[in-house]
Length: 611
Ligand code: M6R
Image (cartoon, rainbow, N blue to C red):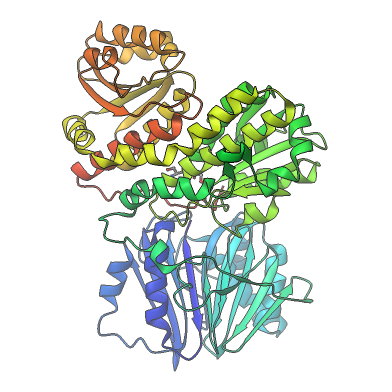
């Protein structure tokens, strides 16, 4: 949520910062801005996409070898030029960008107002900036010291970059709860919310930790804690290629990422799944296998699509491992004072590894002695680092705001985990274990088959694009898939969509059914097949418009549906990795048919780093 970029070095900062903002635009895109220091401070800000900022800066003096840039997802104050970052301090000397929320900004603002301060924006960021300047001026201290004093008063989350027009050789940065990566170049440093603006220039990076302040010069990086003690920067090497964050010939990142799934699932399984020797090797699981298999219960904590992956895992773990599982929305789990005992196992699922609700829920649980197992995509992210152990999904950078390949990667990891635990506990027969290993190995090729011809799905999207509402129904393992299908459609096409267990439909939602409502059944061949056939009949009897996702070769379900999409046959416990793919495509093509920006849907941001 909000993208942050900074540069200091021998290059002109503006092109580096602007390119970085374009790469980070998926994090927020309601306004953007840059601040440059050369012979003074120059700030350019614009409501709208980064391209509008770029246009607004044509013909301007954009020189300077130090610069900061921001792409915003509004929290305090509507999207507008004046609420866009960077903000400039009252004395006009400092400029700052911020990702996060300063929760006690109102009381600080009141303090400053009592001293005569006025504010140009509605943001919490401008309040913090003036607070820092006020401390600096009144205490006669350095900006670094003023920043430290101010941050000790701050409640909330932040990643900030701060520059002073009187010191064009220093960029200050600080983080708590919102991510910050610093790229180390030769005589230059790059700062960003994630590594995507950096990899083009260097692969050596430092992940800044919570409560650290970075004092960044062209050829020096100093990290300190809020107690002014120096801390050694830990340099890691990025394992990412530039191509991974470019569209690679596709019209949209979402489509590229849907099409990447055969290879991303394969990458996730590679080196872990060994059907030929009937084995699964997962470092993080192996060393904690005893703890995982002896767990009296497992809690899964996540948000959004990752929460849906957690629901699939609940079915998997309970069925295969016979361990009770609770799947929690991180935001609820965090605040409802859950019972957590030392040694409890929590599986945290997150694509970005930076989701604020999940992160803070885990911090609280960790303090109470829970063992945190992270299923995370973004390498080196906050949740990955907070976890005691874990398994990366290896899906590569996911840029489209709608999560697609991360979901199937999460399912692949969670399936392998469940199988490993079940094997260790002896709750799965050797025959079923080896059958599921073979089935899992076949998933990438089956996803590729779905993607071979998507014209039918595109036609269905065009036919139903003007629907006002949509119902997605499924049973068993396909229930979370129905939820995910509804979430995708809402996000990308803005059509109101609900996901329900198919049997639950008659306890209320069936009242919505008329000859206008499209009802999509995830009705693949599984143990619930006969039941779902009855549910389809119930909708038909009420003249609903029925779309079915069926198993190739099935003739009964297609004969009942107005429209049908097919997936290859698979064991039902692994089927969600297939059935979700046509639903991802359906939402993509619906958004496209409606002329919407599928990569940057309104009001959304990729990484939700505020609560
Ligand atoms: O990065 P995370 O997996 O923690 O993100 C969780 C949700 O914010 C995310 O899945 C969101 O629901 C997506 N927009 C879904 O497409």
